[in-house]
Image 1 (cartoon, rainbow, N blue to C red):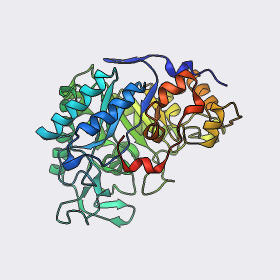
Image 2: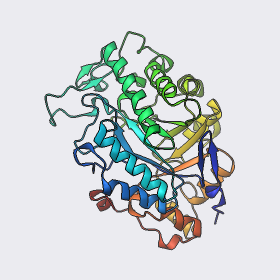
Image 3: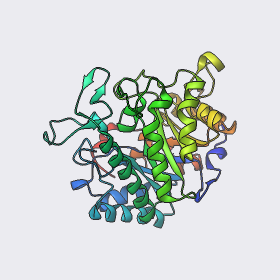
Length: 369
C-alpha cells in the first residue's frame, strides 16, 4: 500500500497555511433557511474541521444579483443576516482548528422559472445550453453590476474572517456560460470565437475581486471542461487553448486553480502523454505555474476503497493518487461526497484506519450532519 504521508504535508501560499493537502470540495446542500446559514450549517462545517480536513470550501453561496441562485435554500453571500451567519460559520471552523473559504457563485440561467416565475434569469446570451433559450441576455450594465457584486463578496469574505475564497467558474453556471461557445454568442468584448476572448468576463471578475482584498489574500478559481448540460463538453482541446484560457486568469489574480473533472485519474490529453498522463489539474499547473487542486470521485470508487484494504488498483485507488501527488502533478486534492457520509474521513486515512471508512450513502444528502 502507498504511504499516505504526501497527503499530510503542510501547504502554504500567501497568507494561507494548511496542515495537509486535503480539501473539502464545495457541495450544494440546500439547507440554508431563507438563504441564511445557521447553527446547523456552522456545526456541519465544524465537524469536518474536527475531522482533520486541511481546507474547507463551502457550498456555493451567491452574490447580490436578482435570481443568482437556482434553489430557495441555497445561501446568500450578501445582506446583514446572511453575512452574520457566515461569520459564525468561519468562527466555528477556526475554533476547531480548521481553515475555510466560501465558494462565491452565480448560477446563471440554470435557474428554472417555475420557482418565483417573475424573477429575471440572466446569462451571456439568454441560453442555458446550445440552442436552448432560457432567460435574458445580460446588458453591459448587468455585467458591470455583476462584477461589482463579486468584488463586494470578496471583501465580505475577508471581513467575515475567512482564509480564502473560491470563485465558481465551472459546471455550466454563469462564469462558465461566458467561457462556453455554446452559451456565449455575444459580439461585444465579452464574446468572441476564441476561449481567450470569452474569458474576458472572468478576468474582470478576478481583477475586481483581487483589487477588493489586496495582494496577500489567496484566490481560488474552480473551472471545468464538462458542464452539467453536457458531460462531454471541452473548452480547451489542446494545451495551447488551455494556456489561452487559464494563464490570463492567473495573471489577473488567481492563485490556485481548482481543476474539476469527474474522475481524477483520467488524463486530460492522452493523445499527448498516454493513458497515465497528466490530469486536468496537472496540465493546469504545468501550463500556468499556479498551484492546483485536483478533484473527481476520490473515495467513491470501489477500486479506491480496494486500495485501502491492500487490493490492487490500477487507476482510481490511493496508490494512483499518492503517486501523482508525489510527482508534484498537483498540490491539493479535494474530497467531496465521501466527507458527507464520514466527517472523520481525513483523520481515518491519516491513521490508516481504512476498514472504518464509511461508504457514501445518497440518503445522507437529505440531512445536514
